[in-house]
Length: 206
Image 1 (cartoon, rainbow, N blue to C red):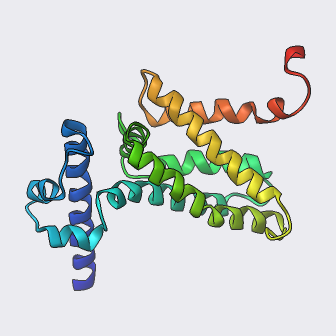
Image 2: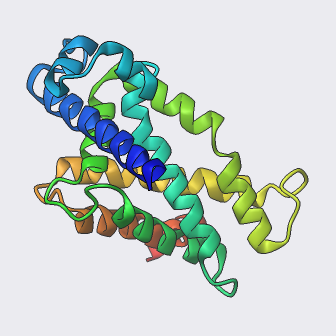
């Protein structure tokens, strides 16, 4: 029981730091927000902050890590009979709603993606992270289809496609008026619907 209480307290502190940081980033901007301002808002020390996050950048990217983990777990749990792209589409919808704030009017994860897209340093860090950490998605896709990712290029191709669909959907979501999780899901589905038509045949004939 005491271990459980400690874990809950740690999670509450982490959540409070994330919430305070996002409020400050929205009010002052990412670059103009200092770590001590985040910790002052939560009434903890900077040393406590660095127990949870290596930096402001690491704090923001924690949402990306949580999203990638949720997607990989949802993809691995999809029925084996689903084709890879179908499984990926369903996994994206599930993972989006399982993230903290995934059902709110302005979901936390999606708000973070807007912050990343509008902050050059964060966008560069995000793209670097995606490039360096796509192996788990590739592994899950390869395992589902019973292929070797070292010799079969298809898992890497689909992982790249999924990342591109999410990026494009995020752009549409930010540009639109509806900032709900459902709107993000619809944007992702709309792009996923065009993958096969974009790759086969002449477009003018359709």
